[in-house]
Image (tube, rainbow, N blue to C red; front, side, top):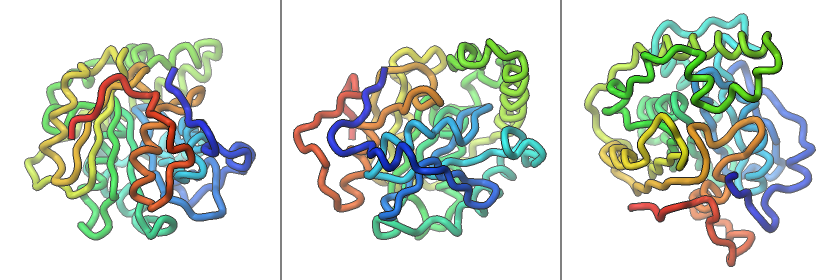
Length: 284
């Protein structure tokens, strides 16, 4: 299991804070009063904002998680999904823009998993240069140039549910299974419309992650992301499968905190702490 942070990170207040919605598109699972660095989190195919609740609680006080609430599921089940990937990028970009300032001197970052990683990167690219995130972390996803050939569009929803490891969480409730499958089908249909277009790399720091036991992504393929940034690039393999952060585990908390802390000017709450979530050092 991915290690969580030690010391003062993951405060009791964050564990008891009441979630707060921000418009239709965003959920703040563990609001914090001191306006820290904002980490906007993008769910995987079929996923929802609540998947990032454990991560939000574990990252406090280093960062405040703002999780994307995709349409056509959960509390937005009556909201239609945009018809294609470009339209989804446009809708998310418009929804996020008013919130891309705040704590930590207005700096913020993006974290996305699988389908959400591609969406996070393309939203970052769609933003004006002066509004782009300081940090983009992609997990469980090939680079945009490689996305079209990855073959996941040929998977059916049930197979994807199994490969992501979420089948065990919902299999006891047939209604939950069908809701999960419906959301995955919706996102796979949007994913199938993605077309990579050559473009100038963004200036954000970019770090690509993969789970050591990911059945869908070769961990040797992360370096393809390097061509998509002019900023610092790193790649790392961490414990876990295709999805690192889920409703029952927070994901690579130590690693994310180590990337965020230098951007905020804060001191690491435990200078002796090493990053227990990595299996190999990043290549920068």
